[in-house]
Length: 392
Image (cartoon, rainbow, N blue to C red; front, side):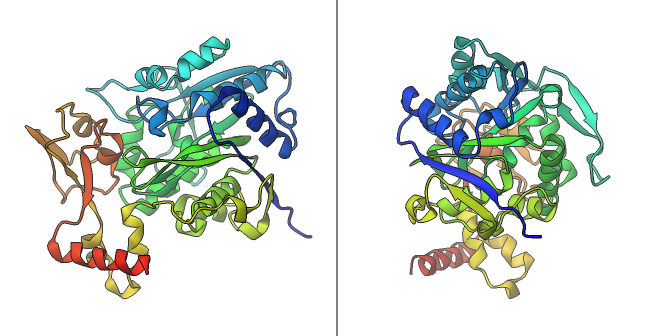
């Protein structure tokens, strides 16, 4: 029997004008069969946004409130009840930053202004769910609002990621793990491949019914927080989060098979990542792709020949180094480091023997004080040559 293709809608949206976003979000939903395919009257519909950190929307770190507002109105038009929620990254002396993020991003104001419920996953309780693979962490502790909703919609921001290359609809569901538990999961799986498997486990047990991606103002470079805003002008939608992420990667010139979350989710049977198996509606790939999207600095390591070996590859990898002129002494890096590898004496100092390369410090520092640098001159020279070779 011929395999049915997953459908991904891509539409142009060049600004966050609320009327334009409303129109294009609704167009995206219609292209995949309409929101009423998923939502019934009276349903509790969770909009799982990206609230990584308390930053204003123009920094392109979090889901834009205009996209959230458009979805709230679309849900309410069907007589259903929208709920907006997430758990932010980073800890401030055992205190989460989610409430700050809800306010600073404008999402709380947008949601409450439309009469939608807003929930902080850090304080909403958890339910223990058996890990489908039967390995640690087992059970997985998932925020109750995710499991109690009748419909879950992942509403990610399209961003590159310094450790994972890319973050989208699949990785967005990591926010279903509340508070400091996210740090604990990093400790359980210090190797990148193992941590990716946890991300896919979480995605499997929370499995959104569909995803609407904010790619109007995306993020390039060393995201998901320290990169640069990039005007992309796209909104994407699909009931297959894996397919949506594969298309989003292709739009920015990144091979989806290089992104471990996408590859492992496909291997687990959770969606389609092969572009040939995906039906694109709304726009053609050749009309939406970009050749100048800046990928994370560590993405260059794909160009290193396989015979180099893991030890030398580790030397070439950019490691986090704090810049003295940017650090304000907030110690979020110290409190959020899963490995306890950062000490503080006037400045953060990373013990690279203990560091697990999760790059949480780089991701969560509100001042973006951590830069990714090679630790010896020879490694810096090799990476410079690789970058020059890539440009050619």
